[in-house]
Image 1 (tube, rainbow, N blue to C red):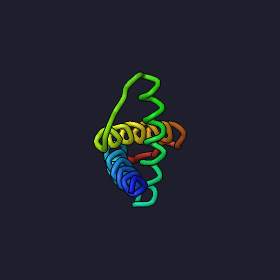
Image 2 (image 1 turned 90 degrees about the vertical axis):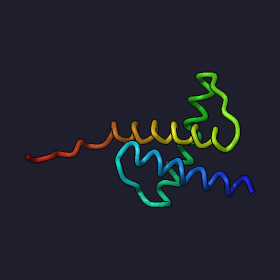
Image 3 (image 1 turned 45 degrees about the horizontal axis):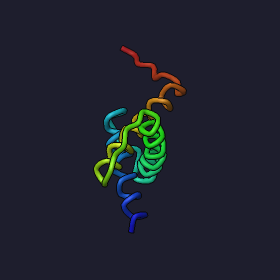
Length: 85
């Protein structure tokens, strides 16, 4: 049962982070991956800072923060988009 919650939280976290960082979603599969990796990254960062979260809402917050960090790190390595006026 917990595995299903991890998937749901991963999808939600990836979706929320992609909306915050880029203004659009990547699709359900990529959002799931971003959310899951973000959850691991967020858990690592929170543990290093001594922050503890509990419950589903705490897991969602941790995953969203980690997913935002992940998307920010990825954006550092991507080529900037050129815009023409």
